[in-house]
Structures are given as C-alpha cells and as structure tokens.
Length: 360
Image 1 (tube, one colour):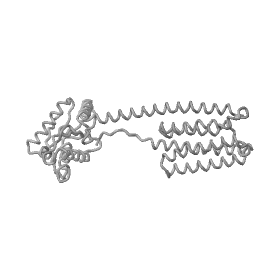
Image 2 (cartoon, rainbow, N blue to C red):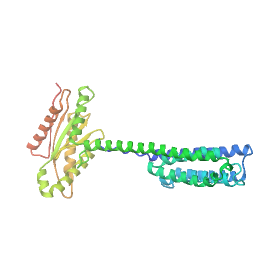
Image 3 (cartoon, rainbow, N blue to C red):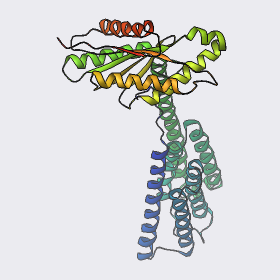
C-alpha cells in the first residue's frame, strides 16, 4: 500500500565509501612513494620509519573502516588525526632536526596540508570542520613559529608564511560553501516536511483528503487515456459516536489510528489508502474487476471486525465500492461511492454495497 513518508536519505553509506577510498588512495601513495624513494636512494632511516608508521596507521584505519569496528564518526576523526599527526611530525623534523629530518622536504609536505582542511569539512559538518581546521592551523603555526622567527635563516620561511595565509583563506572558503550547503539541505528538508504535512493526516499517518483527491484525479486521467481502471472504496466506522461517548475523544482517536493501521495491512502495495474526514476512509485499488473489488472490500470488512481495534473495543465498518469508468468526473465518482456507502448503512451496517456500472 502506498503511504506518505518524509524523504530522509542517509549519507552514511556514501561517507563510509568515501572514507574507504581516501584511506586506500593514501595507503597506495605512501607505499608508492616509499618504493620510489628507496629505488632512487633517497630513503633515510628517519624517513623510512615515518613511511612505515604511516603505512601501519593507514592499514589499521582501513581494517577498522572496512569491518566497522568503530563508529563512523570515530573513523572519520581518526583519518584526520593520522593525516595531521604525520604532517605535523614531518614538519617538525624537517624544520628542527637535520639528523632525523634528512630527506624530508617541506615543499611536497605543504601540498598535502591544505588537503587536510578539505577532508575536515568533507568528513564532518560545517561547524565541526571549522573548529578542527582552525585548531590544526593554529597547531601548524605554533610548530613553525620558532622556525619563522629565524628570519633569513629560515630557508622556507616565506613559503611557510604563504602556506598559513593560503590555509586561512581556504578554511574561510570551505566554511562558506559548507555552511551554504548546510542551509540548502535544511531548506530542502523543510520543503519535504511541509509537503509531507500538507499531504498527510496527522492522526493516522495516512494520506489526507486533499492528497487522496489528487491521487483519484490522477487515476481518472489515466483511466480516461485507456491506461487502466481502478476501484474506489469509501468506508466508515459503524456507530462511531457511541464509541466516542464510551471512550472519550482520546479513545476514539486511538480507535481511528488502529483502524488505519489494520486497514493498511489489508491492501496491496500498489493501492492507496487515506482518511477522508472524521471516521471516513477512502481507498483506491488498481486493476480490479467488479467481483475482485467487492471481494477485497469484503476482506477489509471482515479484517476490521475480526479482532478488537483498541483494548476491548470492537468495531465494524460499512463500505461502499464502485469502479471508475472512462469519462467519470471526480465529483461524480465520489458521489457514486458515497451513495453505495449509505446503501450499506441503510441495509443494516457491517456490510459492503457496490454500485457497478457497465461502460457505456
């Protein structure tokens, strides 16, 4: 049975896939660089240890992400932490430790640092991305500050200053675009929620009268084009006023909600069910002939009457059913099924009455 729902697409699987791709690419580039530098005789013991530790950390992250050993958020933050720590350690070694930093060059390192800020905004929300990026920027600046204070003795002083300036501009741009995307997503979700609320009955969660009328009108247009007919059923609870008097309006509302839930299970996936108003419900069942439509309506009637709807409260329904014909108007079709419903009421209730007209 068709029902209304708010579209709440999750991006968790997409983000997990993206994290896996990032880790695999980082692992492959680390191994490729390790092999290439070793082949050229550029690998120093310190650089070899850095490459080995980086490879092991990336492998651990890959296994953790693949087998979902930690929550997605922890894995994302772990990726950022590994990238930051590796870059920070390499920067400190290259700037302050000629012995252990031999073979570590700042130019290629500075190409990777801005990528970390991009990952920070990609893997987190815009506020968290801003906080993490600013924290990393301050830490990188703090690491390089003694180096910059050397003046001309700092070989890459100008390049380091440019790195921090470009990083600040990049973080501002990333925050702008990330917050814009966040607002756009909020607006989209708000529109979807408004569309859902405008088409949904708050009590039962079914389509409301407005939406059901639109569905019926659309099916009539299809029927007029020769693309198939449908049956329409209108039913309500017998002696609902007595139920309200007995249980109170709160209890009556629970009976209506229970009836909607049970009726929804009795229709097929391709059918549509909605609350027409008060204790009246309307359903359309596609692709049925007259006999099948009346059998389905009878199944519905029996399914409601079989067991109590709410607590010990039992209820029965009266149901009118008719088939849509080419040339039917919305008002004409609804009037015909309404006549069938009141015929069931006059005949004693707890029954189905059909008005099946032959095509002219």
